[in-house]
Image (cartoon, rainbow, N blue to C red; front, side, top):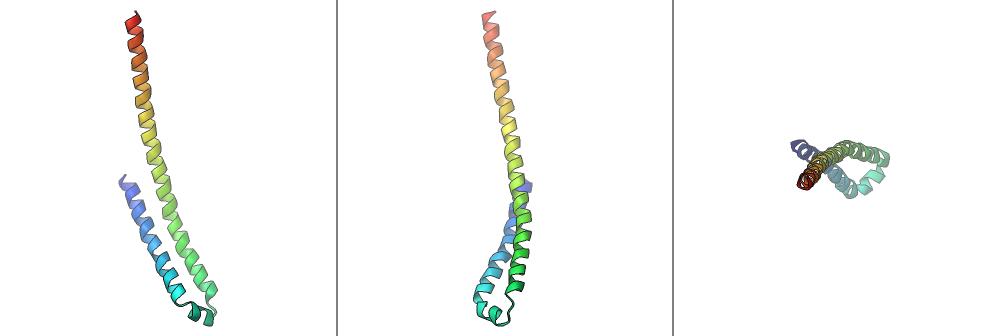
Length: 94
């Protein structure tokens, strides 16, 4: 769980520059067009998104892994309970 929390924190931390850059781009759109720097800003935005997606994917994978472990634990526990009930029923019949 601490790993998933850290990955969520890192994902959030890398998401912030995307919003800041987008806000600055919208605010300075006329200046960006005047200097014909659209492609530079688009590439810069893509770089920020790529960095964010690395942590986003890792966060999703860690969450899925945790869910899988929890599912396996409960599945094992349920199977043990069923086998115990079957054993009790067979003992009662004998």
